[in-house]
Image (tube, rainbow, N blue to C red; front, top):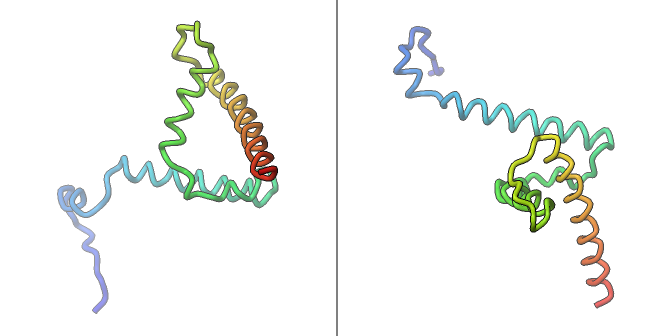
Amino acid sequence: SSLRIKQDLSQIEKDNCFITKAAWISSEINIHCLTSIIILVSSGKLPWYALNVYLFSSQSCEAAFPSARSLSGSFSSITNFSVFEFMNKIEKISILNKIKFTEESNNAICS
């Protein structure tokens, strides 16, 4: 027999059968992000390895904030910054990571 969904479910029945609003919004954000990445890769604005979604995790995001704070210098007491400042810091971190990766690759080839 086919699956039928009752049209007159109570709010309690709906709450017990469906995901929470927070989970729904989180899924929406992830879907939009992944779609954007796919579009940017297919248009050549991002490299192919940006599709390595298995590398997406909270650990790398959590590591970005201490790295961004460390760019302020050891004598700075500023721990908070605006989104604009954070984006500038992330760009610098990206450049530093690229240099580090290049150096490590060169060392691995020479070894």
